[in-house]
Amino acid sequence: MSASRKIAIVTGSSRGIGAATARLLSARGYDVCVNYRNDRDAADAVARGIVASGARAITVQADTGIEDDVRRLFAAVDEQLGTVDALVNNAGVMLRGDHYEEFPFADMRRLISTNVLGYLYCASEAIRRMSQRTGGRGGAIVNVSSSTATRSHRGGVVYGASKGAVNSLTLGLAAEVARHGIRVNTCSPGLTDTDLPPPGFTAKMAPTLPMGRAAKAEEAALAIAWLLSDEATYVSGANLQVMGGLG
Image 1 (cartoon, rainbow, N blue to C red):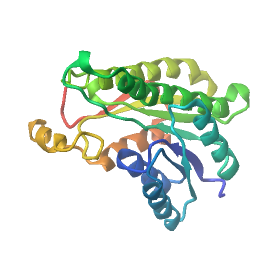
Image 2: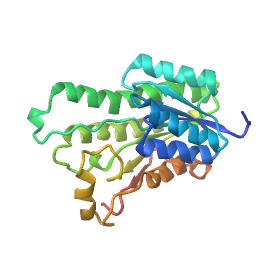
Image 3: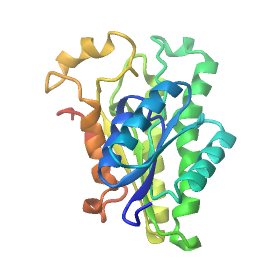
Image 4: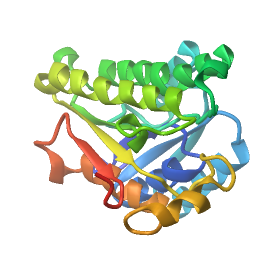
């Protein structure tokens, strides 16, 4: 590996914002771990594109809501790429229910496990490697949140609560690890044209937005890449909103 190339882990990067971020980071000097939970073919396709562009890429299957999977993910990166410099906590699930009291507890556990515990687990493993307090070279973490963390959204109470936790995680970690050479920020996309929302939801809601359209995954990726970049070396604890004019 060239000494000038850094190493990034992008969780949930077989599709959507994660895939767009993995591709963009590879173009901006990173070798990338493409993480996926189920869709190996999609992850492999993202990795092949990155390798074709001249960067290194590996794919690692891991459910980030499972502790042992997260440990295995980071160990694979250690072995195959090297020590991580950048973590994009992006893996997430969106489960909806029109009536909160009817939302199944099993779905609540799954959503919180991935959207909150997964971020906590991955951040912990990343900080162990990055922290200058223990001999690391520093690094940067971006937690991907959502506009639903601060805006009411019928049917999305639990999802919004999980993203509110993400925002709080960023604030606490940013203050704790700043002196150890690690920056932690949030990127909060609004409605984005990916396959995460339920079918038909994006087409229905996009015309109601100030810009009259949903964001492209690449627009969120640009914000994430900036937060990781040397242009943002004094930015930590921020929440960069990619919401197209939503207040």
